[in-house]
Image 1 (cartoon, rainbow over the protein chains, first blue to last red):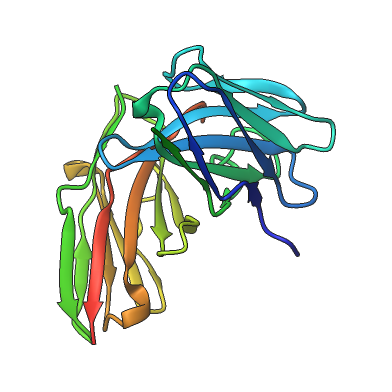
Image 2: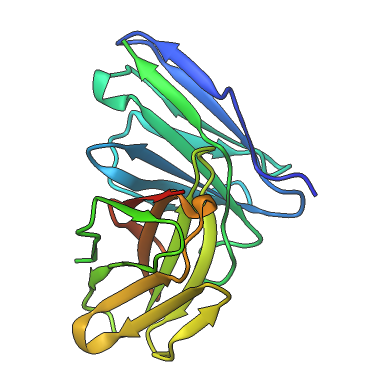
Length: 116
Length: 114
């Protein structure tokens, strides 16, 4: 059974640009959550999608957005990149929503974003 | 407000030693869930355990054991007879009963020296 896949694995962008990250959940999983991991702030919850709808959202500015497709694949977009957006972005999939509460979350390897 | 504190930033132990990773949490909810995750160098977080606030029984799984104490708001993790493969960053996390957001600690980096 394939795990959670994230593409690309590494990305370098410059300030002001925008970026789109992709996450393919485990087959059959309908919930996808996104997290930002930085040395200073640690792991922070961005948002959770279930059945193409954003169910929960963390405390991030509107520059961070996402969407989920009918096949449960999810994309995360960051517009007007800032230096502070450099981080490891992790995606996690779960069978249903309220990921982690009722179902185990399975994490992908992450996308390392560097903003210059 | 929800908060998870892992005061130990880095720990180094020699192989076969026991090691305890501390986790202290804050929440006003009476129903909540605590987790431990392992993040090896590859980057993927691996789920280790989930514990709800009504279950204070300690749990043992092989060389791993967890001590949940509501009186001290702690959920500590002990690795017995550590091995080099245990080297990783370990995260403690909390979510309340609505499950709408996860709160992670800053992680403890464990290095097991052969």
